[in-house]
Length: 160
Image 1 (cartoon, rainbow, N blue to C red):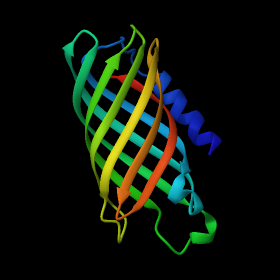
Image 2: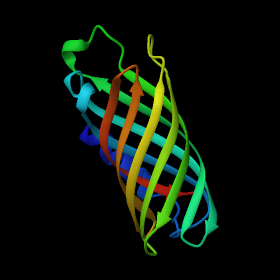
Image 3: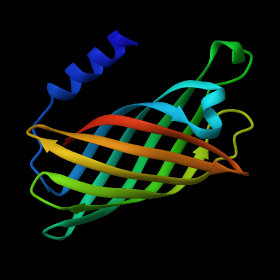
Image 4: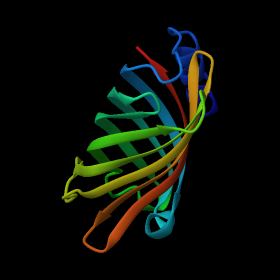
C-alpha cells in the first residue's frame, strides 16, 4: 500500500503544472477511509477522477466529471467481490481565494461489481492549490437502497 501511494505521488508530481482556477481537464487520484455503513466490511477506498471545468465567472467553475471508486473488502469477506462504482456527476467549485476552493459533485454512481445496482452519488470537497497540484479533502457517498458506501478521502489533482 505504501509503495502504491509513493508511485501515485511521484506520477502526479512529475506531470505538468496547474494554474489556480484554470479552465480545462483535471485528473486526480485519492485514497480514503470508509465510514458509516461500509466501515464494517471495507478496509480502504481508492479512486480516480477526470473532469472538465468551465469558468462561469472568475471565482466559480462547473463541469462534468467521471470517476472510478473502489472499496476494498476486509479479508474476512474474501468470498465477495470488492465494491466498485463508476460515478458520473456534475461538478462545481467556488474559489474563496486564489488557491482555496470549495466544491461538490452530484450525480449517479453506476455499480460495477455483481449485484451492485449503483445509486445517488455526492461528494462535497475542499481543496488548496499547491503550485503544480491541488490537494483535496472530500467526503464521498453513494446511497443504494438505504445502504451508504461512504469514505473520507485525501487526494491530489493536476490540470492537463
